[in-house]
Length: 204
Image (cartoon, rainbow, N blue to C red; front, top):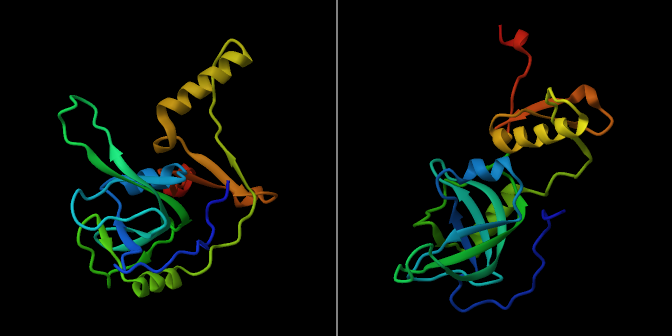
């Protein structure tokens, strides 16, 4: 699955000038985006004022400090139906499909003035962020492994126990080992989306 592609969609220039936007990740969402691959980012949009429309381009930012972590394109807007009584207010929904990710190498964007979770962004400022991000790195094959010692009465039971541990502990507690295909000596461990030392002797 490849989603880090340039946006080549031809669109007519809009008279309101609001075809590029800055979107702030909600608190705690950065960790979730770094732990597991997602194709889309779904947010609650502003109920009033200007709102993105399908086809608009988006710079996804974190706050304090302001950093660019992804680019995307608005692919859906609508209403998010609430869980509970029908009388509750319906929240406007915004779905962004990622076109480029940079969660592990964010770009400083402290020169931008962002007013709220979704802010219209001047196209020139948007392009400046894209230029700072640069071209995507070349893709290559990686080997990813998760090794768990399991005590069980049979191989089938051991597999069931394995998946139970994976579901319970997940990427927040289990180390995943990754290395470029064909270069196992370059193996590194990752926990919580970041490289983690698994050699207790090196901690002494």
